[in-house]
Length: 146
Image (cartoon, rainbow, N blue to C red):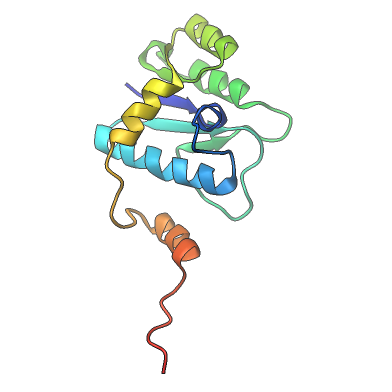
């Protein structure tokens, strides 16, 4: 069953995490890995505009200026032929109610977070866009000093 994840809500409910650009990137990688493992689509939705020059992948969406992630989640659900086949991950009660009314199932962030943390992290970048992130974090190997 595909999932729609309220990314800012998930990060906000995670005690060790924040809502920084780095945390959003890390969450996008973790969710992409989980989606590959489960062989299911997982769409991650954030509030606001995407960071300039940063591609987090086709299943990461930003609500844009003047729109909320909640609105985007509902827009995505309403565009589905069968919204009953989707699960929305959020702790936002108003969004939960609206998603259920649209026919989707709801999963709390803590339950999804447990599933996400059980997934083994990749040992190396799985896609070319991940390489850019790894290079940004760890830098290029300068080689041995002379």
